[in-house]
Length: 183
Image (tube, rainbow, N blue to C red; front, top):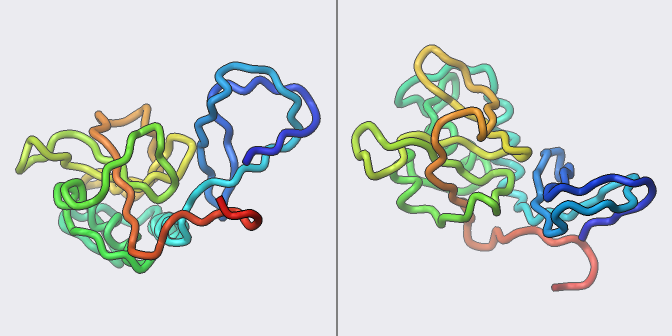
C-alpha cells in the first residue's frame, strides 16, 4: 500500500521508502505520472530475518577483506553474506557459487533488502557467479570486494556484471505483512 497526500511530485517508476530503518527501492507500476504527494508511506514485504541480515552486514562496514574470511574481524564476499544471514538465524552455503546453486533465484526487478546479488563468472567454475553482495535498497549493496579493500557500500549500476539474485528464506520466515486485514 502506498499512501499519497499533498503536493505535486512526478513518479518515475520507483518510490523510495524506509522500512525497519533500511532504505528500499520499490518498483511501481505507475510509469511516469504526476500525482499529489507530500508523504510516501509504503509497506514493503521484508522479513525480520532480512532486516537482521542487513543490520549485521552494515555493522561490518570498514572491516578488511580477507580471501576465505568468515569473520568476525575480516570477511570475503560470501563469508560476509553467510555470516549476515547466520546472524538472522538462517544457514546458507559458504561460497558464492554454492549460494547461487542452493538459494531460490529472484528477478532483479524484485530485489528487496537482504537479497543476495551475484556478479561475474567464478574463478574456479566460470559457469557460476564468482562474487556476491547483500542488497540494501536504492540500487546499493554491501560488498566485501577484493584483497586490499574494506567492506563498503557499492552501487549496482557502477560495478561488475550482475548475474542474478537470490533470496534466503528459512521455514516460517515469510514476508511480514502490514497490520490489518489479511491478504
